Length: 169
Image (cartoon, rainbow, N blue to C red; front, side):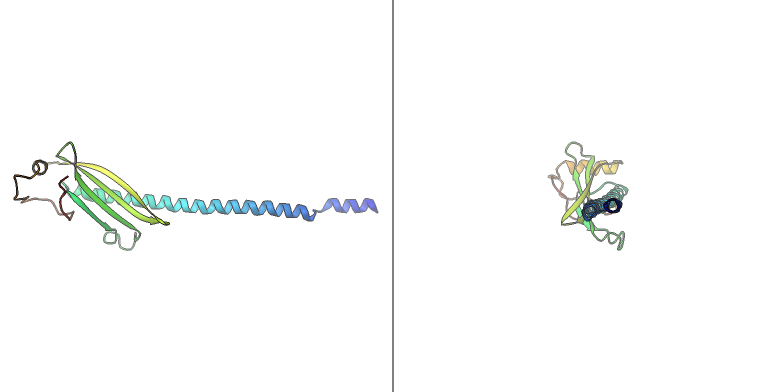
């Protein structure tokens, strides 16, 4: 009879063994769920960075197409260009004189978006050179300081893209 009792006991699991197995399973599930949540957050961040880079490239391309960019800055959102698609994204574009060459402009495009409690950004810097004689002349006039010329520019052919004043830096 004692022999039969031992065999029966060897076939099943004790309550302690089942509880240890459940604890291991629960710990594993918690780790897997945390990794899954982290993976989703990283995927969303990667998606937002990709969108921001493409939007910044679009803005820079628009600036290149317009020709010689005016000095200054402007900002906005993407509602006019892409209605309803990117409500959490906004942009800023700054055009400055180059410190070394008057026929080159430094163009910076920044795209911002809200992600969690902080605002994130992508920034692209590009140099745009004057391509024709008229643009070269405008660049040279602007780099001369403008102290002796108070008439301003006239007869420009730029299709207005930027608003705001010019900087004297």
